[in-house]
Image (cartoon, rainbow, N blue to C red; front, side, top):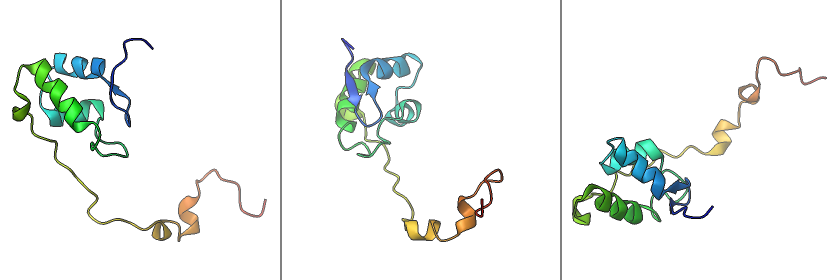
Length: 101
């Protein structure tokens, strides 16, 4: 796709997506994150935050130093998968056939 400039590879957010969000009035990096989803992928913004911040500064006419990083929100406590997989009935849906079929 010619002309597509990807700013966040994890969430496939483009420069056009950022421009659209700014045009809709989302000019704070937290608002842009919530609107576009950038920074919520596997890298949690480690690869895209600076690039998005610079482009947001350019689009809003602010100096880059005026764009603070978004708030990192790690899980309160990691949940081991073994706890989620322990109850066999937790993985069944009402319309699942019985196990003996």
